Image (cartoon, rainbow, N blue to C red; front, top):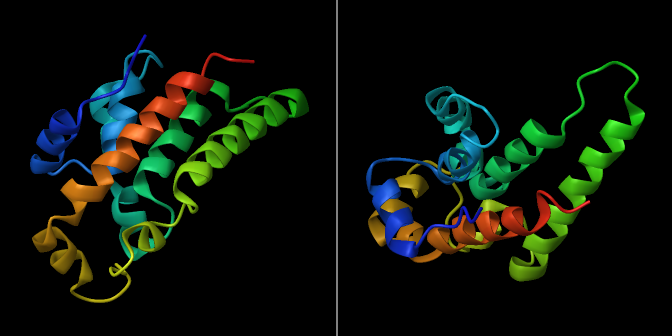
Length: 150
């Protein structure tokens, strides 16, 4: 199943105040047997690199998707843990190959959300629509490529 979104669909979600992390998770919630509302709410704190420019929200959303599918939960499940770690590495390597970093403030260049006012300045500049749509699109593409491959 293809879970990618067009740039216009992502822009529409951003206009509704969805964060990158939420957009990515929402595309996978049903397949992962997750209640979409709960899944999207859980990802709300991860927009804008958790609002301080750290790990890109699209990456955080993707890692949560990987955890929902491959995360181990039984004590002593070393094999499951290693499978999940391998998927995380596969995703991160692919994203870094495209963009050189996983860090929000590095992806956005001039904005550092740990600085007061930079989130508002970034929103007013249109950079979320310009750049972040691509990060979300890439995260979804990479997930489509890796989620069912062993």
